[in-house]
Picture (cartoon, rainbow, N blue to C red):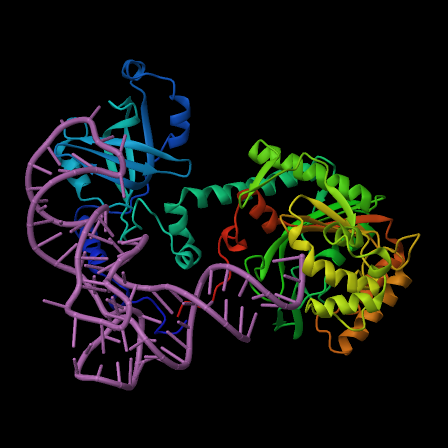
Length: 502
RNA sequence: GGGCGCAUAGCUCAAUUUGGUAGAGCGGUGGCCUUUUAAGCCAAGGGUUCUAGGUUCGAGUCCUAGUGCGCCUACCA
């Protein structure tokens, strides 16, 4: 960081911060304003839950003593008594601070505490006139002085950029942001439990690859000094996970980050979280069933329902997911295209040109159909839909279909108009795989910088024998967008990638 | 990468439509108030209008360039 870009007092501070610094300096004269000996015994939400049915009289009778701590979010002074609302990781609870119970000196000190300060309070539970559960504070202590003012309490933080750059402020201020990331954590936990319950083994494979593979994408490149060799941040764990299946880990999964050096959008972050899982002695039809079960079970576990509202449209994950081939999907929305036309290279090219859709001139019928599908159909698939039978030319790691070697036993799952999952019966014929790597390498030489490298060790592994295996990747961030009704991937990633601030 | 939009007090927003002394609420400061709920009332504060140029007697407002963010689009999951 350069000297100019650092936040120095003269550049960044305003009168509010100056006043708070002066308060802090006063506090320092009397005691350490950052003590670390207060121990709470209760969370706000557990108190609210435990005592929600107890009346004012019940509480007076029991004299329940509690110690709570949290950040002060609201403050209401009324002379000889005050109310404050503190927030901890579970929720909020109100404090009643008064000359009578807290003592005049402590109450006077409290009046100079600021919103954002972190307080520890001890006292007894009671219910106010209006029925709100509160702590009648007998001992109050400032645990951390906050120097910077919080965003306005009613509207909160709304500036998107500040929400992303200063996520801590967004989390302090916005209930919904907290909810999104709690749901995210629970979804990942539920997926883990779903797979572990089916005897899957969770593993971690390298994030730094000497040969980037497992997907068609541009990698980030770096360099290892001691080894003096180039390394790439992984674009997919696929080839390592299948090596593990070769090694006898017959049900294996990994939830971790992938890195792709490509565009950023509401659906793309340079680093994103993928679930990949592989199961030996299964095929892609099994994966589709498993995926339906997984999404239903996760939805029930996290939200208690399979009903999802995404951007004001509704769906029910309990309904069977549709299954369509690429051409069936095209014909569903454009019945005017005949099957013969959709298998006619000339017709497809004329349509793509008419619709101004980019395509690779060397593509066969399958690739052209896919280009047409991606541009015209994909965004229309709101209800969960498996698109099946992908052309072999765009599926270099997938097993060929027994009846039609031009296509593969592969599917992609679309929900809310975007790809959520991609799965297939794995290609375990080492000679076919070697040939397809060579084809990719040829494309790379011809200038396709997303084409795959030839991975000699992966071929060597296949030559020892990969059992017939089914494998799938699920984009966790996009799944979380769906479950949290978030319009942008940046809303479900705690610290999305942004440009430098200065 | 291309197109469109936005940037004003710590935060949320105004500022009469080619321009004429930059305002309010919240928060903060001082005062009143012992059951408040975005507490209330009174008072005094708080600004490099994103940055750099330009037009003009005069620019938050108009023009040019830049920076950041948002949306759409392209590559992609």
